[in-house]
Length: 79
Image (cartoon, rainbow, N blue to C red; front, side, top):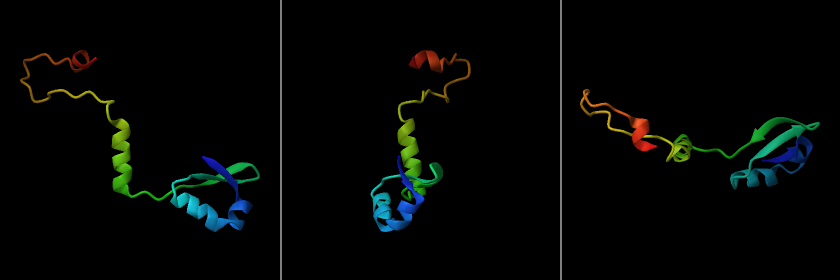
């Protein structure tokens, strides 16, 4: 994430807004300390999709409808 001083941001706001629209994130600083973040707006559906894609391949799936008498070792089956 790039940093920008609040005075610089104020003086060149259109430039930074164009960068944010292109996907660049900025940490706005004042006297060297972060005070805000500028991030592109993302729709709820797109954000949920991105989260699911990050989780892809990290979960173990098994048959949860199988008869109860059958011993279920989900971890052993998929490791």
